[in-house]
Length: 349
Image 1 (cartoon, rainbow, N blue to C red):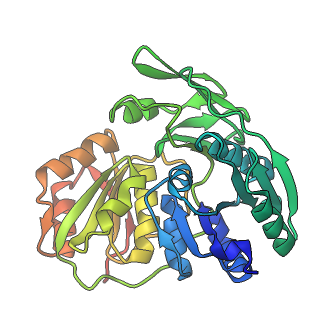
Image 2: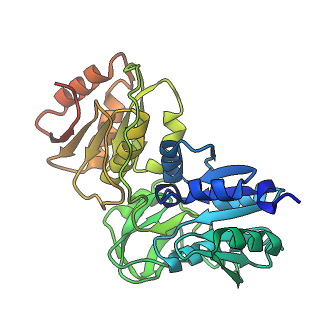
């Protein structure tokens, strides 16, 4: 009889499962029919790993809801408790009567959420040597309030890729009322964080992507350098998690990143892709990812004002079709003379 895992789809979340070697080990051990990757930084780590996986733009719950075949989720939380909480959230977002087999590497546990496929869960537990645990998720309340659990005080808190503040407790509580969002408890609000979030419209807190901590702890692995230095300059404004939609385009020769955290994320991802970044920052970064920049990258810090304003000015006044990336950078620096200082310079010579 064929093992159940050979007919199952493995859905992978987060970069840590690649960086720790979990995905490579599980593929070799379980031989899943297909491996689907969810998440921006997971995609970066997946590409660096060179493993035979399929990257997507979807969230784990969306992928799992769309699958008609056997499937299981693989995750490595920053702590065993945060990993369990993540599985509970995903299980609560699945269709009625649909359980979840959740492989949590941080605690070496196989969770069988909500009457999941117990035969598949048992087989994975036997092959991995992980403990098997039954668990129940009650779903996500839809009362305009959102709890972000499993936080470590002092770490950054995100909503839809925007840092909105710093956790002061293990649980951050947000509330959506009267067309805006406010912090109820557990959060030291970051100036302009909510402003940047609401600039793109009021998010549905129940469906929003919320997390805390670093989005990846491992440094990027440098890749090749794109041969073409001519083409379109993609603009990423305080929304680094949308970057892959831009850099998949072979016509992109570089990225204009606006904001400290956005610049860090873009530099990290583009480092492996070999795409240079021109970052505009003002020094209020949250250390959410290990830095790294491809050759040809430059980061400038504004000496007066905010990165938002200066970055949008560059996007509005500079031609975003560059005949030569290096010349575009030089001309942009000349246009900003006296208003910025260069803090990262990866140009040759």
